[in-house]
Length: 438
Ligand code: SF4
Image (cartoon, rainbow, N blue to C red; front, side):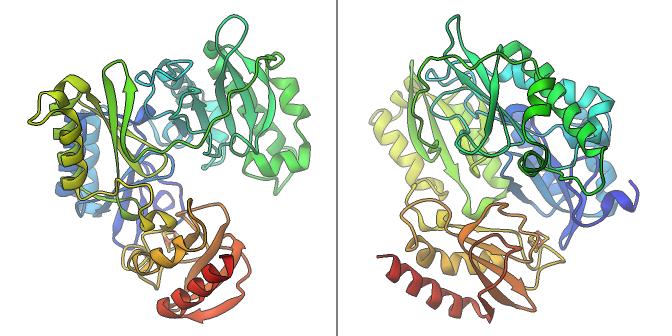
């Protein structure tokens, strides 16, 4: 590990961690977000033995161990290697940024089981050194078209399953989420890794034509338009078949998947989990389901369950689910006000922060929910980097010298309309904004 690899702001991995206020942050990119229960327990053990016992679930469904010291990083690496969750090298790891449908292979509403596609795409990205020149945050998305597809998650290159005349195809899109992406055409599911590589190579080549060219696809399209990408990727016309209307996935609580299967989704306040939480979920997964956790890009972990096992519990399936939800201590209700606020780790975890963002977000959550009935309305960020949320929110509070600057309808790096607020002052202002929304 070099000093350069530890510099702050680097997009971290497991081979190349990032230095934060509480030590090294080690990000595990677990393919497809599929975590067998024994692996979940092993990761929990790593978090306790080598880190500070805390884990984050990132917006790309990656698990992040926190508080790893320099001395414990080597032993941690050995353990992760033994668990087969380490890439061959840092560069291959850095580009393996693929978000996919968390219930792939389990959700009968899906058009394609995207797990083999995701595995092939990740192999391609990690194995082709020419693609390692992609910018660190450049990301891909594979959506199975089902009710738990990540249609609302933005990506640089996206593949969305749609019905085609001879079976499902992937609609290929660039930049943005399902609504905002520029659609190029369609490809067969098996062709997605090659199409992704062609688009990535085009992006890299375009960036080499000038200095200061954008590092993300949406901004690149504003400069070059979509034609260079359309010319490079072998895509056909998107099928005429009507595109089914889809609502953003709702991962919390119990979902009946049909075919005797269900899934229970749990959220942790502001994406912060404890090692013991993973152990508990792993136990639940083995007792009630096929023994897997599924990581989602919505900061929730889903536990697939079998109906017959719930039915065998005292009182039957429904009371069993109700008990699990009630006793979990996690967020299981989509109307929980804490879901209205996003917050980065802040102080004391991050050296760039001067405010306790997660503590303050908890204080502000109720007021934030008053701004809109659903979605994230408030972003509490320790600094303008805005790690917790790249998009604009109704209100962003950005820490500076122990106080907050307030930005309306913008990102954490936007222009403040108010400066130097305490968390209580910010709450009063947000409550007033909520009243004026009514
Ligand atoms: S946004 Fe938060 S976590 Fe990211 S660098 Fe700033 S203070 Fe640290």
